[in-house]
Image (cartoon, rainbow, N blue to C red; front, top):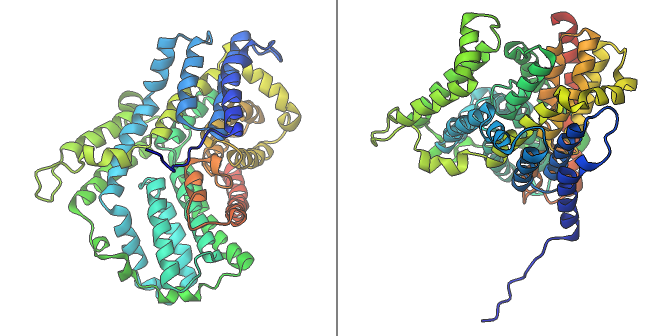
Length: 488
């Protein structure tokens, strides 16, 4: 039977990107060694460069699988050890079990309930600017608990409903500014304290390289106000630049969000309580350094163990809804809760990043010499500011996870040499490197943002995300600088 279905092929550019990715992973290592990099270091560097390029220009899953193969045969380790170090990495397991709890929280309606509850507060009635600022601040801070991708998808729908109900045009600046604000606030919230996922892995690599673990409590004291101030500044800057009339928001009725958002389900309450306790335990253990409690959590149980216990408890704890089932029904939530892209990125990037910083590769001395003209002999404050600017630039031109790992061997030696407390540069890097927003390939949240059907103008998407990034730099540079001078 004849069919009119249109057949599509790989574009020439995509095929070229595939070839470049594989050539870097499997061919770069055979180039003559340079700059003190060892032969095995060349192969490790090739795997890492291939990862960065593949994640940025192609995909996540297949570059990860090829990277496992390339890493296993490069001579740095064996294939069995490579697979074990990647797929068996404690951060990978921690991310997996953490997704189960956080994803279930969103699956059972916490996000929609929280939106309705927070935006129905009387304090917002007749105060549109307070309403908008609070919208971004509240949901930014809540992203420390709720999966940022899931929450952003919920909020995109809510923002469109608000725009329609209040009479804003579909392609109006109000929609673009709102969507970019949602993207920025959820990314910032998810990076405020690196207690899970790939940010936790980067924090571990930073501590390994510098010998200075990141104090989560102290980092939160900087990043929480930074997130709030950034979103408030973004609202006012974008209002002035894009000439937005927020007075129409006084007409929004929270009842239009639907009856299902009126109450929080019993199982969602129980998931929230157990998950919050787990988060607090991990954060306290990485704040109360050198205590017996911290030693047990960090070295014996580990963060992965904490989240494993959290998920295990929630899978057997009665739901409280009289259905004879646990709080989390794994087979219902697994598809929406677990992001395999993040799992694979953590699995591959973190072990390869550790190999890059290993003395056997000779890569760190090469990078130190390469960046000496910029960093050598500079003050800690100068290095901190350049770290923030470099992190912001790199995360918006390529994969944030890969470039975050690349930043560590570049910055760490100069931070130590400057005498500054390494914790502040590490905290700034992890916080900022998460904010890949301007280009679709910068991060998974950015790819989702740029693919939204409501945002048809590519130039407007870039403009509003650039404004949000500038707002962050205006706030983050002085905040981290002041903190390093007075708390370091």
